[in-house]
Length: 262
Image 1 (spheres, rainbow, N blue to C red):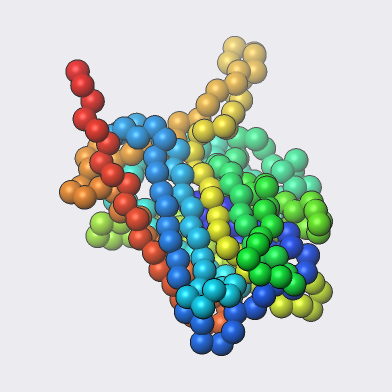
Image 2: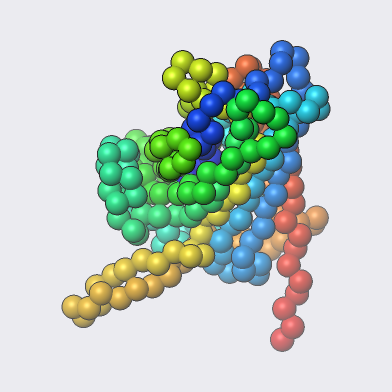
């Protein structure tokens, strides 16, 4: 939903390694949202590509991000997907990183930019954000584990979780993720997220299975694009919560794909 690094990316917070420009009281946050399907065909197994950008009207860094709630269009077909055939355990991910989880638990990947401390107008990239299938909740809701791996200038690995919940109306599901507040330095202020790009889907993923005693590599089946496109396209929406108590929201639409010629 969506390392979702939807989202995913609050964990990018440690990549800076120093204290960011902190948004002053009373600033007004703004957000933009992008989304697309690849391939972009009705009913097709797809990779969902999404991203967001956070800023303020005043031009200072936004406050540290506390939550992301990403709403996805009604009609997305989850029944045929083979994403997340294996489960990644949070404790194994924390202890060993990606090596602690099966390759078949990977769901997607992305990157993030965060505010560089002690300066303005620039950012640091967190190059590795991964999304993995976590243990389901007691209500059998799907759980996405996000793993952020920062190597330089600060070495840090972070794990946090999102839960896929049902939605109503023009939206069929929502990925709700709580982002931990991460200090830029020990006991320092939290780091600000500027932007995130992420995928959920089979693009760049390879799973394995045993067939007649041989190990076979295959690409998993993604979530399917709805069979019908509503007037105006497929809607996406996101709400962002910040640790200072403020909020921002954004919407976008994936246009209906062009009709296929027979």
